Image (cartoon, rainbow, N blue to C red; front, top):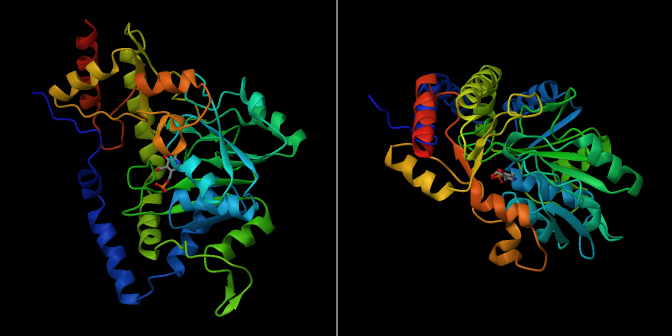
Length: 364
Ligand SMILES: Cc1ncc(COP(=O)(O)O)c(C=O)c1O
C-alpha cells in the first residue's frame, strides 16, 4: 500500500521524545527558571564540545545570531557585505538591518557562493563576506580564506543549515570570525520554537556578543554598552539538551536515507542529485535535486501523496525588497529548477524507496 509521505511532520517526529520533553518541561516548571540558568549553561557547554570551539553563545534565533555578529564587528552604514544570491532572505536582511549594503554574488552548481566570480564583487568598501552553507553543504572554506585573509575581509558564516557538517575536522561556522546557527523547528537540530547560536574562537568577540544580546549588561544593572534582548528562551535550551542526545543517531539515519536516494536516482535521466551529500562536510539537511521539469514533478509527487519543498523559489536579488542591478544566472536557474525531497530521521527506508519509484515513474 502506498503511504502518504509529507515533506516533514514535526508532530510525528516528536512523538517518540514526548515523555522526555514533558519531563524536562515539568522539571523546569518546578524550578521556575525561565531565562538563563543551568539549561542554557549546559546547552552552551555541550555545543562547545560538539562543535569543538571555545565559545558557543545561544541566542533567540539564527537571524539575530547573524545580526549580532555584524554589529559586534561594527559593520554599518557605508560598508558592503557580500552575500550569495541564493539563500534564505535572512542573510541579506541582517546586512540591511545594520545599515550596510548587501552585495550579491552568484552561486555555483551546488547553490554555494561561487568562488570563481567572488573577487569581482570585492571593493574597498567590502567589510565582510557571509558564506552560506546551503542545504547543509559547506563552502570550500580553505579556498575562500585564501581570498579574504590577505584583504582583511571578515567572514561571518551562515551555518543555519549546516549544524553537524565538518570540513577537515572543523565545524561549519568555525572558520570565520563568527559562525551562526539556527535551531528553527524544521532544521536538522530544531527547537520546539525559536533559537539560535553564535560560535567564535575570539574571546573579545564572544564577550561582546554576550553583552549585546542582553542589553549590554555584564551583571545586574551594570550596562557596558548599548545592546538588546536576544537571549535564548530557557525552555528551548532545555528541549535542545534533550535532543542533543539523539543528534548523532539522527545524522546517521539521514545519511543512510540519502544513500538510498543516491543509489536509486543518480542515474535517472533528467535530474541532478546532490552527489556529495554523504561527505563529512555535508550534514544531509536537505536532499535537493535539480530538474528542468521541477514544477511538473512537484505536482506529480503531490498527487501521489508525496510532499516536497522549494529552497528557494526566487533568488534574493529578484525579491521586492532587494531588487537592484546585477545578473545572477545560476541563482535564478536554481530558483526555477531545485526541489527538495523528504529527508528526516523519522522517515523509513520503504518511504524513501516509494519516493524514488515515483520520481522514476515521472521520468519514464
Ligand atoms: C540559510 C539560513 N539562514 C538564516 C536562517 C535564519 O534562522 P532563523 O529562522 O532561526 O532566524 C535560516 C533558517 O531559517 C536559514 O536557513
